[in-house]
Amino acid sequence: MIYVGKAKSLRSRLQSYFAEPVTLHERTRRMVQTASSVDWTLVPTERQALQLEYLWIKEFQPEFNVRFRDDKSYPYLVVTVSEDIPRVFLARKKGIKGAKYFGPFPTTGALRDTLSTILKAFPVRSCSPTTYAKAERENRPCLLGDIGKCAAPCVGRVTQPDHKALALSLASFMAGNDKGVVEDLTSTMNNAAANLEFERAAKTRDRIEAIETILMKNTMVLDERIDADVFGVAADGLVAAAHVFRVRSGRIRGAKGFIVETPATESGETLVEMILRDGFDDQPPARVVVVPDLPDNSQWWESQLTEVRQSAGEEGSVTLKTAKRGELAELGASVGLNARHTLQSHLSHRTSDPVARSHALAELRDALSLDDAPLRIECFDVSHLGGDNPVASMVVFEDGLPRREHYRKFALEGVRDDTEAIHQVVARRVARLQPSDDSAAEGNPGFRYPPGLLIVDGGLPQVNAAARALREAGIALPVCGVAKKLEEIWLPGGDFPLILPRSSEALFLVQRIRDEAHRVAITYQRGTRKRTLSTELTEIPGVGAATAQTLLKHFKSVAQLKKATPEELREVDGVGPKLADTIHSFFSGTSE
Image 1 (cartoon, rainbow, N blue to C red):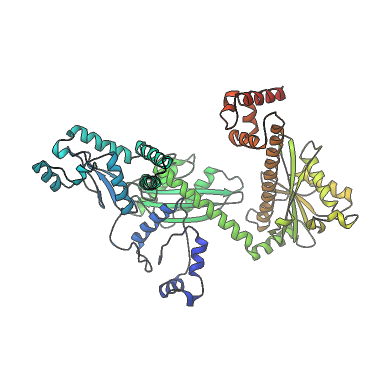
Image 2 (image 1 turned 120 degrees about the vertical axis):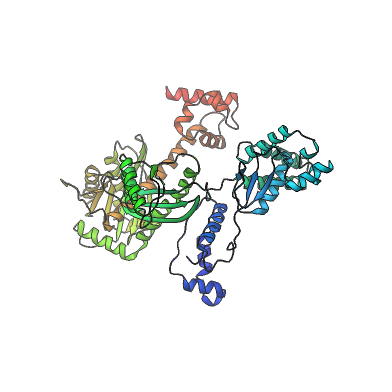
């Protein structure tokens, strides 16, 4: 590793590096010329990115990093709750017996500012033993006692038990168990703003932001006792991606993503077993292995991983577990984010690779016995809600890439099932291939071009319905269907489906096209569903377009809105008792 950096926009950062060499700083130019590859890890917030950057620069000492290469460590906030007269202070190392440590935190400045603010609410002693002894001897408090940032137990202004209770309250606040300070400051800020004291309000706002920055949990640095491998998985039909964070002594020492080919009957447990088999490379497993789902034979896996660990000279056995809450669960969310990104990157690369696309079209031609490779493919899918409000979509791929300007959406009427819906939408589409005049295809340029292949989402009944629509129109076009369960390819009138290898580029392309058609159809169906309900709501006396949208946003779904009581309706902004009763009566009458 030669350089570690963070970026909110990876694209912008890389563009700044891979520019004309003559425009780069000498150090940057040498770094780019030395590098052989680029890898990245995603985290939820920029602050966590800063923490991970700091951690890895300390860990790997990259040649081209200057920042954070000193020997300093993260600062902690320390409360010595075990002492008779506790104190609070900042430290960079642990070691005081009985003390509570909070952190580590990435910025010392923000920690000092926040401590200054917190001491106003929890005036715990923060002076050194020497200063405390001097004040006690002279019976005179220090400046912090005079300005209200210390309860001054040194001169008896507060008893030792009361001061210790104050220190325990501060520790509880830092542990996230007391939000009273933030609430009081927020109230102070709002009152200052209402009284037009904007400077005071701004200073209070800055204090709130400093406190919230400190209280934000650091998920990149965990308890030093944690030794774990945290796995995340993301699957998409024929392929799955896994990612792992390797945590040693509470620090993320490495991250890795990899692709696994899934079996035909993949499940969460099957994928977990595959990553347990392939996810460690030459590194021994940690004492704790966190996975999304536990396999049925988890004890057997624990024994196998324990043998691998001990054969590498590491002590201790391996425990296989899932994390539902706590630090490992929060870290698992970041690992899952990276797994989804790894999968997305793999699919995007596979889709955009011209060689893979050409190979997929050639495979599809041979598998379906077509005369030519289907350079233009159109796919149809139907979506409805329990048989109501049926719609359909048509997506177009040319040379294996989507042509979104040629996509079409269809509102369907008088259809009883998916086969009738497929027949109607295919008939409406092919009617545009031979327009009686130029106006028939006006505004629909994509309709003018005959596809090399029609795909429908479904099995044999749907394919036969599409073939019947083509025969009735007197048009000969190749057509096939894709059944979701086993990704089977069906041809019209076929007795058996065509099974393509799961590693086939042709099957991958067909699946991507089918999934895109499904996405467009279901998005269109949801949109028409909201418009239909909104129109229905505006028929209620006293309900306008704005109120209808507010109701939809509040109740999330049609079913929840129709089941709402008058009391629940009155909770919506802009809905009073009379209007709530009117809405409730309208839907009660409709349901009957």
